[in-house]
Image (cartoon, rainbow, N blue to C red; front, side, top):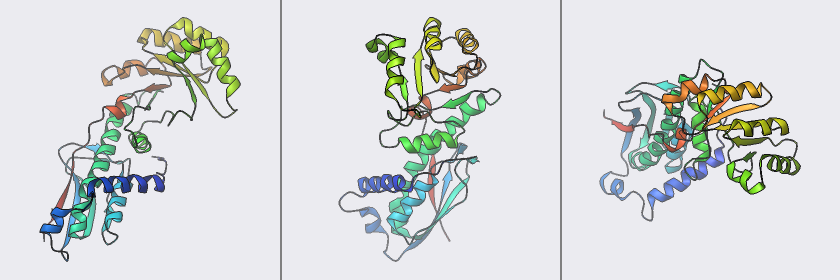
Length: 285
């Protein structure tokens, strides 16, 4: 799997902020009160009762490193790899107080990102027999977008734009205020540079005809039936990318993909992904 490299500065900033939130003013008073400063410990991060896809190991590693450079972190799997219930994902060894203090932040990042990757993998597998790719949206957790979109890639999906400055996406409200599809497209083309792509949303085939006459890079086919999607794909005939969207869940995913669209976008990949249940277990002896 060809994954992007997570920006190390973003990783460190996010982990520092999470640790500052968790440590508060006095640090981990429970570990300070109950664990001798000289105590050492070994632990594993393991999956509980469900299988999953790994994502976020760099954030888990950075958590332990920032809490205490004396902690040794060994990842046993790489991001994008699938694992079963009970699988050991990483081993940590070093000062016991530090290890326990880092536990929750590391598991929060890892569980969240594995949850997104795992859900995405279910979507990707369901349409693997088609040309369609599953992609995420901007419906992400504030402050965690880069990591959740990375997790989508770990699960076999692709990324839509990361922010408002990546590309032009003309939606129904833009069209309404701009005075129609043609004025909106012409204004967008006059505004952008040569490297910026334009996507426009339509929910009716007559709107698609306007888009095809005027030209765009991608058309977002919103809340269309499978019959309408098949007709839209035939009308487009490869002249631009076709993206389907609008409440598409796992139950209806296969039918949408088999219409011939290039992309299927789903906010559920990030806003509805359950956190995967992972735990840190101390090894005795």
